Amino acid sequence: MTLETIYYIGQTIAVVAILISLIAIWFQMKQTHHLARLESSRNMWIYVSERMTTLVDDSEKAEFFHHALYTKSDITDAQKTRFYLLMSSLLVMFENGYTMHQAGMMEDHFWPRMRQSLRDFIAPPRAQRWWEIARRRSFSESTAFVVEVDKVLSEINTDLKTQSG
Figure 1 (cartoon, rainbow, N blue to C red):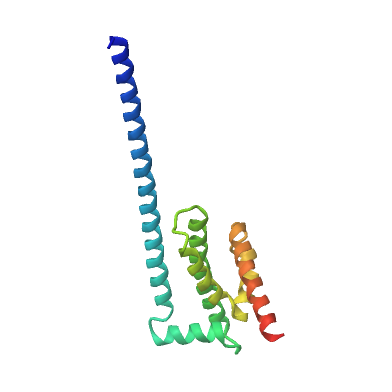
Figure 2 (figure 1 turned 90 degrees about the vertical axis):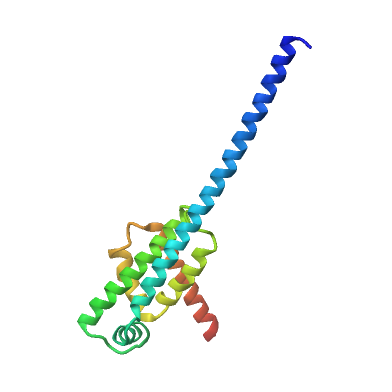
């Protein structure tokens, strides 16, 4: 065996070792990305859970929320302001979740669960009237999210037509 052959064998082993190292680094990066997505999903879920709990953590809040969102009776101007701010904070939460999902920062199964909650909150008529104002006033810069909420509303209205007819 010549020195040149030994040199080529050494070079081949070095290349294989480098390739194995690069593959190991790639797997490690993939795992790190997955763990970061899980952590993001977990943090968002904790935030969503805490936010939802604050809506009904005492009887006054629960009654207001139910009355403002689900009944057709009139609410005072002060209650309208409170309702507007409450819905704004909820929709910003959903907007954050949607943005994280679009950016690949959350696990794929998480957004459909959030979307269903969005659907539950935006379905009542008063919430839909709120959205008509808020989509122009507060969410106009978030075009993709506005399209998503409008799609949810379209699905709701299609379901209502199907159920009634």
